[in-house]
Length: 423
Image (tube, rainbow, N blue to C red; front, side):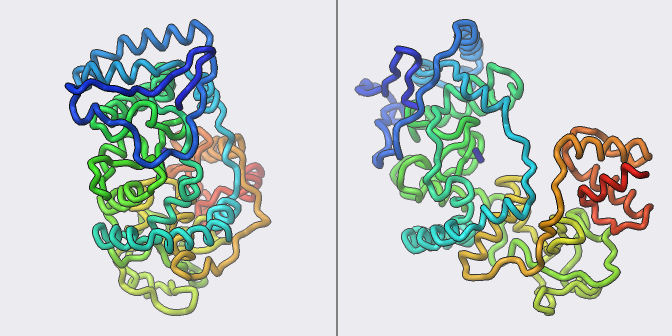
């Protein structure tokens, strides 16, 4: 959603030769198809952190037992858990995301990613057809998520999940979330879908071809191949792709509905009608002068909203419920657009027609925080100044723009900030 390891001189080895009296779920011997390379080694940690984690682990054990984790599962799992300082380093230093949406989408829908996606559609044609028939989700959308999440399985992650999640839970910055993910990872081991040494993924717990976190795995993963395991880790992507389709289907995917249609807005369009909270039928939007970029009327695919991802100067999209279904996988509008546009290209369609305002500069987090502070000081309360542009900030900005004779598109641009500075 989002390793065999060495700790100093200690080598962690896979568990083999389990007793005949163990349950079927506990007799799992590893994937039938080899993983793409060995897991990353866990760097050595200082004794204070290591002892702290082991103390946390001992204190957590009763909760795991109360949730049905067996002594054997706990012992197998706890034996490989060590404090992973690299995970904490990555958690503390996540680079500020200041890339413009158009640069992000250039990478998401690059020629190489499109070409590889088309090759994957051909290579896995039979299984993708079967997945689409069962779950009603376009195979191109499933493959697009695969491409976005792991570059079609090339970047599945090689971090041992149990030590990573235990480290993050012990660290406590997002303790409750990672405690639940750690517990859910233990349940995956308990079910026999994989073993502790093959439960690998990203540093934050996302796993497999389409990067399920453990809670999403438990809720949505499926055994599409019928081998008794929901195997999203091996080189065979069938279970992972089917699990992604199941996730979307359970998130409200509507067969035959587009995720979005690019549109043009009429002169004098009231930007108060834009945004996800305003929904109208395509016919009602047509009555307001909204048209497809080719001049036609958008068919009646259901209730829709107008999204302006770069404000009034950029493309306009009429988005449908399938946009929200993809957003259940990842809430970022940029991510949803990446999946949607990549899937369109995999279907042989073109990209967006309207140009992006590539001359515009994206605000830094500090500048976004300043924008919120200035709006609030002028009486347009953003209900927080955290440097993140959410709906409350958009509403406040829209109201200020309207009051100052600007296009009220709610887009936090450098030009808007400069105008606020002069207010």
